[in-house]
Structure formats: structure tokens, C-alpha cells
Length: 165
Image (cartoon, one colour):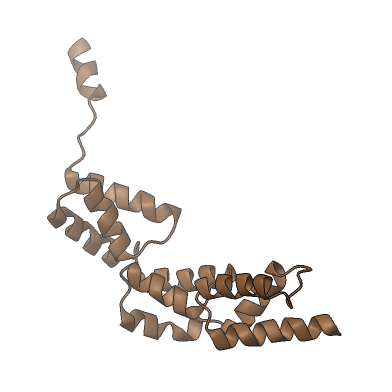
């Protein structure tokens, strides 16, 4: 009877493929990831490239991972927290998203003016925008978030105009 108990207590060992797949699925269960991000995570965990490639195909075929879905969600999320189109496109490319997928999602972007106006209204609180030092601090912050100079100027002029009234 003791020998039988030992056999039932032994766990079936997972193959490297199963471990790699489980690791990728855990990451994707938390949030969307690009194929490039998942690949790097798995390789950094020490999985063989051939296994990682097979797992990536499995994830794509089963619908667990989609660069299209990742891109749409990423655009929505980043714009909601106040980032411009230029910065988001740069980040998407850095995360391995192809120009084709980005171009297919251009209609998902909200207008940069509207995004920046909302951000600026939240950021600029009771500050004197006539003070050049304060103004440049805001301009540089907005540039770092990927907004074009002309959009920044329009938004700041709008805010200045509304303060006067």
C-alpha cells in the first residue's frame, strides 16, 4: 500500500513546451502583450528559441495573443492617460508592432488636440502662463508626451483665452 501511495503522489513532470506555454499564458492573463514582448520574456526566462517560436504560434492560433488586439488596447490606454499619437506610435514600434498594424489602427486614435486639452486642463492649475519659465515647463512636458508644437500652442492659447474671460 505504501508503494501505491508514492506513485499517486508523484506529479507528472511538465515538458519545457508546457512550462513555456503556461508562462506565456500567465503573462497574457494579466494584460495584453505584443508577440515581441512575449518572445523576449520567454527567452529571458531561459526557454529555447525553437520552443518559444512554437508557443508563439500556438498562442496566435488559439487567439490568446494578438498584436492587433494589443495595438488597439494600447492606443486606447495611452491616450486615456494623456499621450500623443507620435509617442504612442514610437512605443508601439518599440514593442515590435509592424507599421501595417499601426496603419490599420490609425482610425482608433483620438484627435491630439482633444487629448492634450483634457491633459492640460488637468495639469495646469492656477499657474500664471504669462511666466515664461512656467510656460516652458508645460510645453516641454507636453512635447515629452508626443504632442506636436502646433497642437501645444493651440491648447495653451485656448487655456490662456479662457482664463481671461
